[in-house]
Length: 350
Image (cartoon, rainbow, N blue to C red; front, side, top):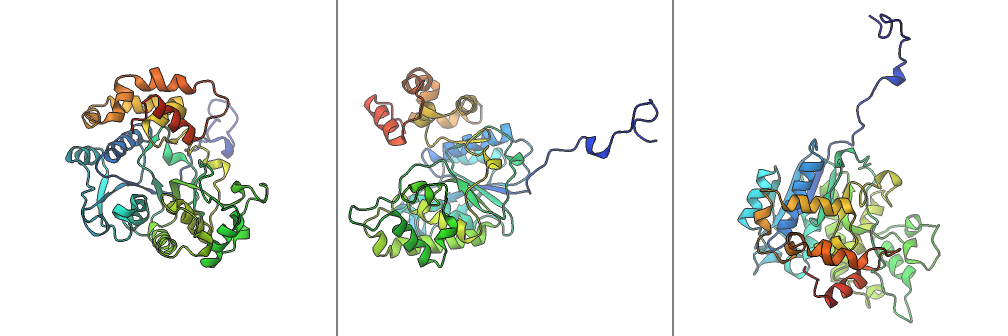
């Protein structure tokens, strides 16, 4: 029977038929977790994912650095309690045997961890100090066009007084790897402005296949570290190496800046809070509320025992002391200024 005819109403045109919510292609999420605070943050991220994206269709892969190779002489593995909590929440924990970075550059964990996801699957990398506050499965990622977080500050490069200037420093990197820098520039920005150049925060990034992405990221990061070249001779590479090479990799794979359709990242869907003092200083209310709710969960609360930053949640220090310090400011201060003020008040619990 034709819909709408039996009761005398007009048939509904096909365009009015309710349609299911559009989803991104199935993808995996990759994070890194190791001992100390990072495994606790990873557990909180996982809990927030399960709470706010319960229908997430991909794998949550947790890379756990091992005490071998580039981590020789240290044991970066998670606590047994954190590993058990992650496993109970459905995380797929995989050992990371670092060969290139490890103790000398822990930020390199994220680079080498890209070898762990299964081949041929789209991926989203998230820093462990991230909280999920919305349905990440509904974000319309285009994995064929890699991109990354734009929530960054002017941290690199620092051109010396007598040159080379910013453009020359970046151009040397692009030319080194056979890339056309002109296609990466934002023409809406002034020639001498840092935002004219492609520069990301490595707190999240996406790609079509972690394997090729990770191999290029690793090869180029090792090359820049080992032989910076004349243009980078005066530049600091630690801790910026991952953020220096990431835009080169993304540009080489046909990617670029994220469009407005990804505004939920670093917005209503995720918050890369970096650490709890900064979360209370500048984080959105939804992210603060979610972290506090997660901290009370029975699978998370025991993990926070003995962890100094948890005092900001449990003792109310974050809401009572940190949040009022920065309330009402029209423009959030730079992170360096936030850190300085928190240290002055003995509130930099990180």
